[in-house]
Amino acid sequence: MISGAPGSPTPLWTDLAIVIVSYNVREDLGRALESLHAAPPAASHHVVVVDNASSDGSLALVRARWPSVQAIDAGANLGFSRANNIGIRATASEFVLLLNGDTVVPAGAIDRLVADLRAHPEAAIAGPRLVDAAGRPEISVGHMIGPLNELRQKLVGRLYERGWGPVRRQVERSLSVAREVDWVSGACLLVRRTEAEAVGLLDERFFLYMEDVDFCASVRARGRRVRFVPSVEVQHLRGRSRSHDPAATNLAYRRSHLAFYAKHHPGWERVLRWYLELRGQLPDA
Image (cartoon, rainbow, N blue to C red; front, side, top):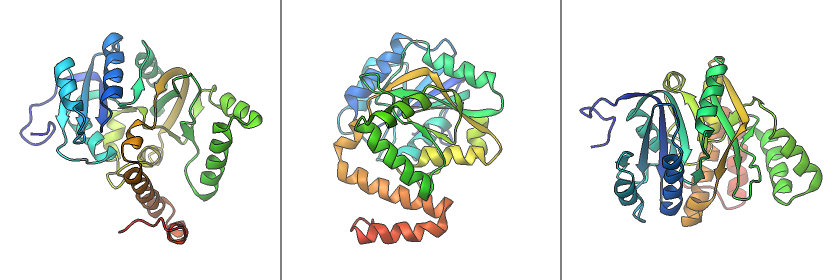
């Protein structure tokens, strides 16, 4: 039985629920859970891992090494949004932290993120600065995705990845300033449960990708704010689950891309569909 379903035991209330979705990232998942175990948040908390039918023994690892972690077998690869929603519904807390399995959380990071959100009652969501294994900041915040913003973000992202000086310096400056943003990455996203529930949790039309931008947009539509908190850093070893099946991941991205434009920019969705068809990348319906 999946926890949170009718007939499941009522979960205990905590300050914080940490929800981790796992899909064939056994080694990274172990590292993430070890970082939480080595330096747990001071706030009362409950950790739940929702496993999307991994074939690498991820769920067995969790149950063997971290018996205090609630391990949920989703039974199939349900995607990021739906699996996160299962985890959220299986817990009861003031705050929910969505945390990728390919992250490493330093001591005190989660408590500082919670403290920031508590200090800003106008905000519903807060995200830290994400850095790679070498400490290089990741572009994990941005403006609402639309045709022009998306083109700009992709151009800046490519120049930043190539280390082009002016862009690198501009990006790193922007990722050092605490501010309100349109969205923060779902790799590490703290949200007030009341606000998450008010928007119906994550939109399950997004199997993978775009769900965090959409979720933040839904929260902002209610007049609430999204905060970027660079004084808190979390390591993100991105791309591990993507490398497991890149073709399926690319297909999921294109489907989410189309779903996002159909929801937020319906006039441009037809243009995007035409562009993907022209490139031979239009996914089947």
